[in-house]
Image (cartoon, rainbow, N blue to C red; front, side, top):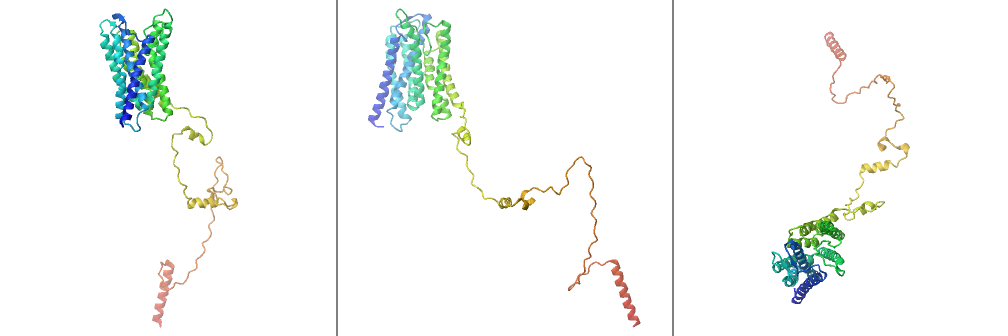
Length: 394
């Protein structure tokens, strides 16, 4: 990779990540979503933990923004090494969140906690986790769309939560990451929204990403994992911040733990559910029902055998010239009618005619002596005796 190309890639990735981190913090400070100049007693410690989740998420999304911007400057055929170096540059740029949060935290007092150290560690861990998020944004288009979808939804929920409190005389509420916290909701309704907001958001995002991946013709595994990227940032952010000590932070913490699984569930549903085939008529019905299957192989036409040729010739004869061997059907006009209930009459025995005598032909040459009948033998014996007696008389 040329020096000019690499310098432009790393500069854009790092600069955009730093700009995204600072912009998000400024917007959150201005809207009152994050407030790091507070004095909180031990009973309000979970409000401080909720701020830590926002800080970690800002660092990760800043790295993602750097990766998305650097994607446009990746050289063709770049390998995993180039993407990894760019992801590290994005994480370094996202590290701007660390000093921007540690400085105002010096004016924060939380019972039993060193705010500056704790918030610096959370911001640094978020930037480190941003390496993997930025690498995914540099490598997969579906990951970029998932990050963008979930990120925009989280910001919309936060703005909706603080919008009613912007009127004069109203105090800004403490807004939690990924939770709908408007002041007009009751405590019970807020607890329910804290439990279901992030899983529902992740499920909808997963279904949308899975459907888009399926339209692109990706493999089943890629479709099933397409809904993981965006909700995973919420899960990691709450893992870095911790579960807290009461329901204010514990409920959204466990909801965030299920967000990644809900995103994968949505994309898996999009991968395994089949669309109903359109109603078709004629021979095109089977082809339209399975458009992705290859056509079946066709067998070459085989020549007709001699028997088949003879049968075809015989079938062209007139009906009166057809033989039973041609049609395989025996004529029944000469057969008596069948009546299974009438007694069977035996047929008359055929009259035997006298055998026709076969004339004897004289033997030619040396004939074999056949077996003679007893009468013939007796006649021959008498002839021999008469001939002997005649010799004596003579």
